[in-house]
Structure formats: C-alpha cells, structure tokens
Length: 436
Ligand code: ATP
Ligand code: MG
Image (cartoon, rainbow, N blue to C red):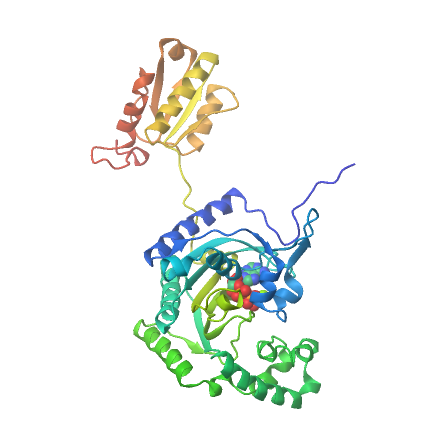
C-alpha cells in the first residue's frame, strides 16, 4: 500500500485563503518599492555553492549548518538552494555589469529562500524574503533611505510595535583592532564559553556577541565594544545616518551587540524587531556591505540592503487586521444543455473581453444548484442560459444583489446589459450594493 506523500518538513503549502492574503501583501509591497524608485530583479533559486561560502562566510550558521547543498548528479557541479538573496543579486549585478553600465542601482526581489533549521513558529526551511539592494551608493543617505522606507511600509501595513535596533560595524580595519581586543577578553573567559563560542573564538569572535545562550549574556555584555574602535570616517557616517533618522522622526536603539549573522556587513547594520511574535521577533534586517562586490570578483562598489521575512511580517500584519482582498466575480454564468453550454462559453469570453470578471459554471447540476453557486460566489449578476434562450441565440441577465428583473437579450448584447447593471450612471460599481 502506498503512503500519502507529504510536503517536506518545514516547507509549507500556502493554500488559497492564505495565498490571497499573500498577494494583497505583495501588491502593497510592490507599490511601496516602486514609490522609492526600486526596480525588480529575478535571480535563479539554485546557485553555485562557492557563491554563498564566499559571500556569507565559511564560519556562519548559514554556511556551517543550514544550506541545502548537493552535487548535480549529471555533471558533478556543487549547487545550493539559495539561503538568502544578496549574494545572488550581487553575483547577477557583477555578471551583467549592471553598475558599470547603468550607474548605481536600486533593486528588489522576492521569493523563497532555503535553510535547514529546526522548524518552529516563524522559522521554516523554505521561507520567503523581500530583499532590497542598493549598489553603487557610498553615503549614509542610502542607509537612512532603507530604514526610513521600512518605517513607511510598517505604516502602510498598519503594523505596531516594530522597533529599530541600530549599530555600526565600522570598517574591516576597525573590526580587526576590535577583534584582537575581543579575543584577548574572551580568552580570559574561555572556560565559560559554550561549544559554539569556543569554536568561534579565533575564527569569528564577533559572532559570539550575538549568542542567545543566557549563561553567556553577562560575559558578552561586558565585552569590548566595536563602537570604541570606530575611526572618524565610520563615526561620521554613523552620525549622519542617525541625524537623518531623527529628522524623519524614527526612534531607534543603539545595540552594540547587533552584529548580524552574515560576514559581509560593515558600517551600518540594523534590525526591526517586535515582541509580538515570540522568539522569532526579527522581521527585517540589513545594512551596508561595501566589501562584497569585490569579494565576489567585481570592481569595488559600495552597497547596502536589507531583507524582510515575509512569513513573520504576515503573521504580524494579520494580528493588526491585515486581510485578503478577495476578488468577487462580476458575473456568474449558468447554463443547461449542450447548445446552452456553447453559448455560455461565448457569453463568458465576451464579458471577459469587456473587462468583467466572469466565472463560468462548470460541472453541470440543476439550475437551482447552479443559481446557489452563483449567489454564493458574490457575483453582482447571473447570466442564465437555458435550452430555450440558447436556441434563440439569447441569454437571461439577472441582477443578484440589487433590484430588477431578469431580462432576455441577444448574446451580443450581454456585456452592455451587464455593464448597465454593474455600473451606475457615475461609472462607479453599484449593482452589488443595490444602487442600480
Ligand atoms: P534569525 O536570527 O531569526 O535566524 P537571520 O539573522 O538568520 O535571522 P537574515 O539572514 O538576516 O536572518 O534574514 C532576514 C530575515 O529573514 C530575518 O530577519 C527573518 O525575518 C527572515 N528569516 C530568516 N530565516 C528565516 C527562517 N528560517 N524562517 C522564516 N523567516 C526567516
Ligand atoms: Mg538564522
């Protein structure tokens, strides 16, 4: 006996009730991105494994233990399902010479990402991100723009309780100075470090500051702060970002331990967090990554970006009353008999050709049960075709919401007749609230 197949653990089906909310959300997001001048880019979901190792860093959670990597059985290539979008986006920009040919780029993408994590609320193995990358911009203005645009989206979505945490990771040289001090400090507390901490002490000590282990909080709290190692330029950049945020009226908290889980960041880093989603409270994270383009073999270009976790944002949005904009058909076409069915197809296509949303009844059944479906669909109008009408080349047009009787018209007049019922004199939709 064969067992019913299930989706892979941590990878979710998004069923129509939810998918409609997703689409509404995506519509809002697209409008928002366009309003800031960002343009779409779409990259493959599978990339060469070395891309992520080089971009994200060998000693990171993602590369060490979260990537879905495999060997192409046909040619032995090492491939990975993308765990994030920045590396792919930068790879694409370099490969196609986007910045050199077209100047600085404001880009966005959305789609599934894959990480082999323990599935739980707000943490999945296939999850979705909306990512924004600005390539070729060096100044603090783009850092501020990214944060300010996030705040506007929270506002557009009506989200509350999303707070901003901010830090500066300085330059590579400044981090190197801090790193030496940090290692010296952590060596003194080596006995207390957990397994991850001991392993990262010399490879990625900055990441130890990001630990969630409660036993280590006092150790990392007292560790040397990167802020004390920032040079004048990094400090001025960070100050300028803060000034622009203050001008925009966006409150923030400087979190000295905000280091991000990916190695490519420098200078400004930020996270938007909420307490409303339990442990998985970071809904958006990003920052500047000036070194990445050259690290991936491109001509050096400054860059900054961020990514939002769609599942987490949607959970928050639903809590704040976000819902689907469920499309309601204008017309539902019911029919009975072979000739009527052929006319029904013609009428439905004519209606769609006029821009109406028309659902054609499929699957047969009595007129009564078809009319029930028509009513349940929420349609403003039913087009009714019996054998009688069909033989005369006519259709019945029946208002379902407003007053008015069923009228019989030639099939060629169906769209005009429906239009009279659906739109009132002002050209506004009216039939569904009875104001025909
Ligand atoms: P976390 O600390 O929660 O693991 P992260 O630092 O690994 O997050 P990023 O790589 O910065 O996350 O990804 C940006 C955003 O994508 C996160 O803030 C979060 O909203 C979302 N995200 C990351 N991993 C997952 C996941 N496994 N499931 C759902 N959303 C995720
Ligand atoms: Mg993670």
